[in-house]
Length: 109
Image (cartoon, rainbow, N blue to C red; front, side, top):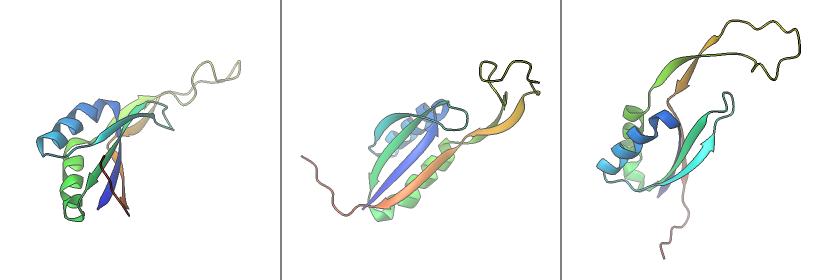
């Protein structure tokens, strides 16, 4: 058995959760916050048999795509007085970060 830990952007959470349910996968959803942009994320914990891992990864890949977003490098309240504010920078957001780990034991009570 494997635990598939999937971190996705808030904008992708409805699409991925609906796709997982449509394919018959159960999961636990945990709210989380991203590091670089400090935007909302959702972390999904998906327990599957070893043979199902590639199918789950396919659902995740089809549901979560990266996209471009413009952001300011420094928020105005964090910049020292008199600091030059550069133009917004284009960054990639969205997509998914996935960890697949072995499960030594699983119990349901």
